[in-house]
Length: 191
Image (cartoon, rainbow, N blue to C red; front, side, top):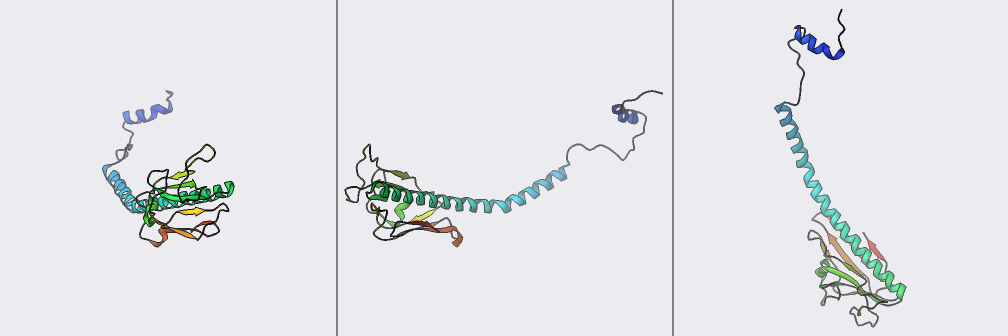
């Protein structure tokens, strides 16, 4: 009796005609299976792509709202900390306030700066009070942002002369818009 190794059995069976003719080992995939998988993937991608695009738009609007809210809160904090007026305004160059301010000019650069002399313009920068305090970049083109038609001025107590609000939108659906309001007391609220 000869001793056969386990790995020799399939070769031995094939050599002696002991393999059943209907059974073959399969390797790879057939063209039909490949086409079916491709078709199913295309359908899934077609359904998911519009939702992904809409999700990106909503996230861009959310990000713009968070950056503006952060800038307003930082300006209020600086006004209270230093007990001096701080301005938040649209800017064309990142160093001075835009004049005149329109509702749509808030989509460009927005700055927060000190206004110690109360003239409604950013003071010159110094080592103890660098101006501007912060610059917020432009809002993405897919986001619509409108705001007040005047410079926002926090006094040394962190309050405003009157409340203001901003409106952000990323699309036509109502669920994609948000509002940022700043109460006369200076409290910033996004909803």
